[in-house]
Length: 374
Ligand SMILES: *Cc1c(COP(=O)(O)O)cnc(C)c1O
Image (cartoon, rainbow, N blue to C red; front, side, top):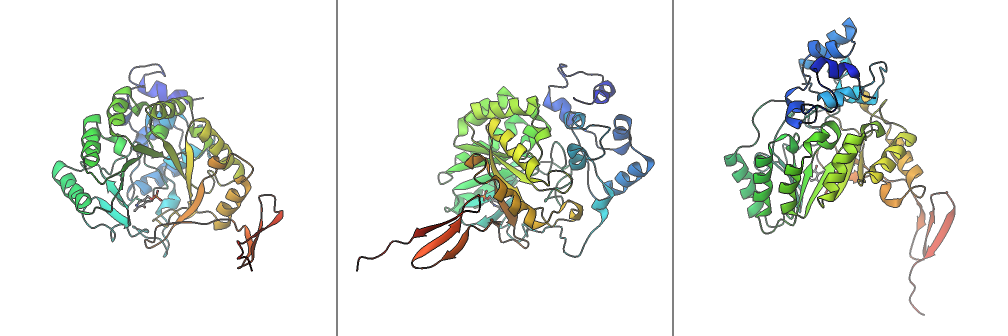
């Protein structure tokens, strides 16, 4: 059930043209405490805490995403992802503004080149909703202009000159907060580079502003295949009928869909929730791709879970549910070594003769190595 107060505040309903128009949703994002408090009951302390937080980090929540929050549940998983808490103002010595050292791996502005064959192209700092757990919170939320033509041309020059780049991941911020023409012009220019084999878009709009996935956008995007999209759902509650419709439209446009989740304390930190999420994702035609350990960005300590939980979750899923419904649990190496899968241990011993391993039920098996005939 969506919170009726969101609708009465804006004087719309679920069928209104405005509500279903992404530009309306984007323009009416809730960005200040006063507006938030007139929709969602907040205590004086909460109001004060949020204001304090907003001195360091921005807030923006689409009316759609806000409407999914149960106003009576202080632990609502969407509330915790969208509404600032005072814990964000706490910082610890191990936290960094740029924990993955992306700035170091940036040979030209707007490009992060860490792996041999692929780059990130960061085209905007804006998102439909600012996740409280954002790893790139050092950048996002600055309401400045997206990449301009001159900057884009410089970034594309870098890709053009580096022929080993065969995969360009367009991200941000959220590239699908840009206007259709702008998105198409970026994708088209990337596609024109001969050695670029695949293009990926990283976007959370299917989750936070699903009405963004319009027929117009899809008709533009599907001209530039092979184009993949990775999205970001963290909790089964986010897979509403609107989100599922957006995902099925993307899939119908021939775009393979992956999902990147972050393990977040108090939000999705249990094997049961992640299992429900992954099964709901494959039903919505999305392949669970990564399950991230929370990064060491500033103010995220309260979201971090024990690393053993991620391992346990994958161990519980593997073998028990559809193989491709199981995400890879990864830690993005602090300091910038890239994403590393952190797996449950299946191998008991391995030598020239055989491997001894256990299966998902902890039963033990052996497999002989190939042997030379004597
Ligand atoms: C995550 C990431 C990629 C893409 O990595 P995949 O494992 O191929 O999904 C590329 N570049 C950077 C800097 C990244 O952080």
